[in-house]
Image (cartoon, rainbow, N blue to C red; front, side, top):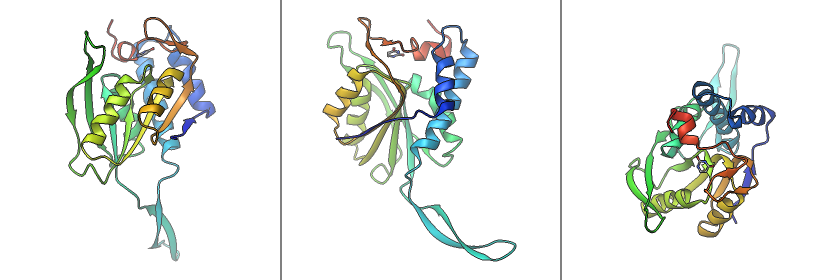
Length: 209
Ligand code: URA
C-alpha cells in the first residue's frame, strides 16, 4: 500500500494557516502557495539517489555527492496545480513540466481529459503530480491513469490539503502510489469542499469567482 506522508514542518504549517485564512488576498495567497511548494519540494526530494564523485577543491581532492537517480517531471493538474510549479522548480530547476487538463462531465460527473502534454522519455522519469487540494480524488486518479497509460512507471502525488475520502480513493485505485500532503483535513462537505480546507484553490490563486 502506498504511504501517506504529512509534512508537518513548522514553516509549512505556519504558512498553511495563512493560506487557509479567508482574509488572505490573492497576491499573498499565491506567494504563500509558492513558498509552501518550495518547502514541500525540499521534503519530497529527501530520498533522491546520489552517487560519489571526486572533485578538486582549492585545497585538496575530495569525494562528494551529486544526484544520480531518475530525472524528474512535475505534473500540475490544471488549473490550480499551476500555483505549485514555480515554487518546486526553484529547488528542482532541471525538472520537466508536463500538464494535464481535466473537466468534470456534467452527466457522468467523471473527470475527462481535455489536455495532456508529457516529456518524450516518460518511462524513465519520476513524476510528481501536483494539485493543491485532494478532495474526492477523481482528478488525481484520472491524472495517474493518464500517466500510466502512456508508460509512466514512477509516480507520486503531492498536495497541500487532503480529505480522507480522496486519500482512500487513491489508495484503492493506485495502491502503490505514495501521497505527500501538508495537512489531512476532516472531511468533504455536501458541495465537495474540503472542511476546514481553504475554499476553491483555483479561484483564490487566480482571483476569480
Ligand atoms: N477543490 C478546491 O479547490 N477546494 C476544495 O475544497 C475541494 C476541491
